[in-house]
Image (cartoon, rainbow, N blue to C red):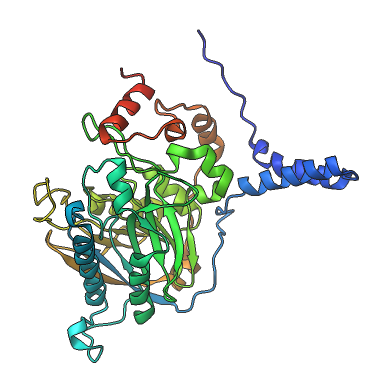
Length: 398
């Protein structure tokens, strides 16, 4: 059977706004007004903050340049046989790494500092909880509420040092019962959460018969967009030290490009077990943004995994928009690297990547992947094996 070819109309992107305007002008009765309101709501959900002829949304910078640090830390998993003790152990370890990033360990009582103040500290996706092939019941036991005691502890450090901290976790959301979300978090210098950024999608096919069960945007796309709008699908935090995006999605160059097109100036690649250094270099060059590839360190204490799991290529790296390495680790142990980033100069001279959308959109709009979105809306897999079965079924591999 011949496949039906869809006609592409670029103007359809603006249909919601047009309908809303017409309905508002014509609206004299409650039915018309209700339709207009519905159309305007739909239009608002379709609004996406994206670069237009080189211009994109920002907020005023509080300073021209910032110091950034990338923390290469161990994966040290919570042990559910002693959750409270091992959670505290891991959280204390992360807080100490934050102190060390600010060159001011607690033993110095704030009286001494070795180096400069850091404005942004970036950590990988699981610095506190670690990673195990937990089932859904177990994941819900270790997942954090945001805000919660763990985020407040990190917030205290951010407030103490007047800095931003990006970090990741498994999180619960009250509107998503039983879901456990792979969440990237940006904590601000006031100690509060500035941005919660869901993982966009899980990578497929790397885990044998298993697949990941943490919920991503792609797994619940329709409901997610209905609740939060399209702009939240690939979020960018617009802060007074620059536009920051964080993603735990690995090997997804088109996604990184889209984040740059949405105005990201600093991109944090936080996936554990990935090749973040090489990816960061390629991304910085192609997307023309500052990129931090934050990897995990050798982890001798992570139950069930060889200590070198996830330690690849150069480890952790900070790269400028030309692809020049500003700082990188030269080992796979716990380490912290820092670099100076001139955000103000970057804004003045930045040239957003030029994409010939007129010839790309027809292909992207008609392409259909094997694995379609919304896999977790009907039924949540309880184990990694169930998730693997779901992937194979939806991809017609069984």
